[in-house]
Amino acid sequence: QVQLVESGGGLVQTGGSLGLSCTASGRTFASYGMGWFRNAPGKEREFVAAISRRGITPYYADSVKGRFTISRDNAKNTVYLQMNSLKPEDTAVYYCAAQTWGSASELENAYNYWGQGTQVTVSS
Image (cartoon, rainbow, N blue to C red):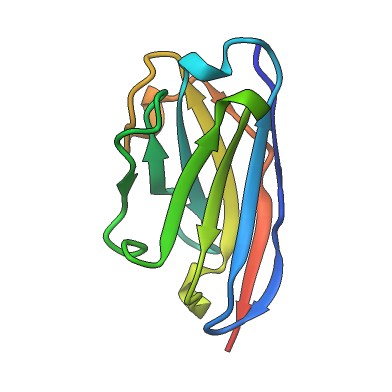
């Protein structure tokens, strides 16, 4: 069983930046593909970014490309999401997820483990 704990959410003004972290329990983090998803009020959960187990192939939703950066530190069992130039439409609960195949995927059902989420609110 893998536990994922997100941190770093909060309130920020339009154009500001926030960094999210997700730390995993266990010794096999380096073998997992990791992803970030978000759930905005009244909308279905959507893909944000993903990174393969080796961190070579990050993958982004078009809506965040050029503004968000996903990275990972396998020595710290942590995946990060740096969010810049934030917009009100980025307001959502952000979830990290882990999948045992090790690849970067935009598909929710590819992921085996999910965190509890952290709220990001962007004020206009």
